Length: 339
Image (cartoon, rainbow, N blue to C red; front, side):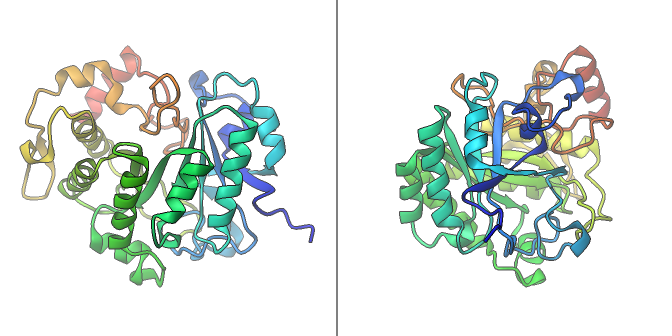
């Protein structure tokens, strides 16, 4: 065969590759990666055609598989990754991302078991809902050793989802099915052991995004936010990232909803759907800065382990998701951005 494919080989984020010493390099502002991100890999790639995704079949050939959430994902032997993870105290969790491929379900179970035997890290799976028809698959993942799952819904409304991920691109994904699988995941892994990913800036209004965050929360799922970043060669390479003020408002709204400090129903929006009133004093939230940090599954210490340093922006740009606690100067910047 000679093909480097999963489950024996697996892709890992550039940040993980540096942290495990496969490549040399340093992190801007000495950010530390806490979550080891792994991605299944097949020669045929992902069967999804999502307009914004680096793994999409719609991506131009010369860019195929080069980047995903902004960075390279080099391919390594699974057993080498496990070896190098041992004794890496800064890593608090491992997250395996499925892709939409006929072998992905079976290989996911195999990789979870390998990780469980080879490391003592808690394991999350970013699942591919289109492959999941009933909760048996989720029960099997839990049995194999995963303790949490995530579902990348990405688009905040059924119309956008359909246009960017479903019928609009001839892709296999369906909005209702994604939420049905989330319901199953909450049942299998229990409330708030499932999460959703949402991407801000796919041309939804702030009101629509807040409604999607609230929908997840009401079902028992936290939201993990991403800021849209145009992947070269994808159909949306010319689409701009969302303005910083918009992203900051959504970060605050997510924090309020996910921390159960308030809900979407108390927030007010203008006629363009812009968030104009959070229904509470957000000054103390801005002051602590936590709302602007990356959100993701927790590690053993209860703090976010999936901190994806610079997954949303280049290190030379303003940080959108802080992979560490924002400092006084960062808070000053955030205040300016919110104005």
